[in-house]
Length: 214
Image (cartoon, rainbow, N blue to C red; front, side, top):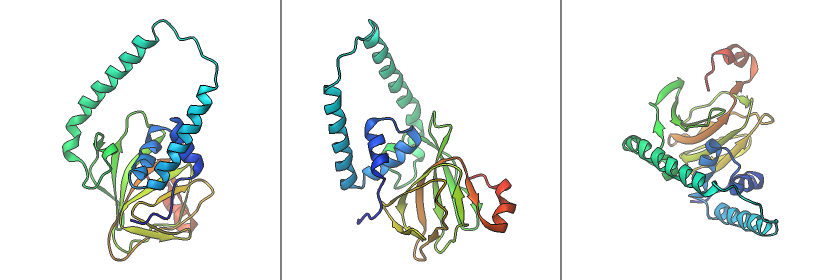
């Protein structure tokens, strides 16, 4: 697999620092599973952060810090047990880090396009979902009211910014407007973390925007 498009250094640094929200973190982690170069970059950022921590003066911890940390670990273990029941319905080819989360049903959202939600607790401002486009599907020209991180799992699409195949990663924000077109030879399945909503462009987009739920 040859990967041509990667997360920005800023996104990788935020991921390495642990400050990226969970929804977007899962999309980046899924790319890292496939990309040696980005895993190496993240390790570099982590080493830099570790060196900076070593130079900081020690901070006094509260007397119950250890007990509270262990309680949080126990709580995470309970969450894992509750999520285990959802793993029987995971999507074939879904990255391993996502198989613990509940999946919605595939639903039609437009000609040749289906969506399957991924329930990520605590990701209220960022929706995570799978998006499937049939071969040759032309998605509407659109921009974004927030950020959109997309990882191509299977197939490919192309737009003004180039061609994006399996393993490629795309970042878009309010400044980006594009119209992805799925390749003719196979369906394209993407993993998406979307903040805000898509904003359809043009006259028809102005008419349809009130009805768009993506």
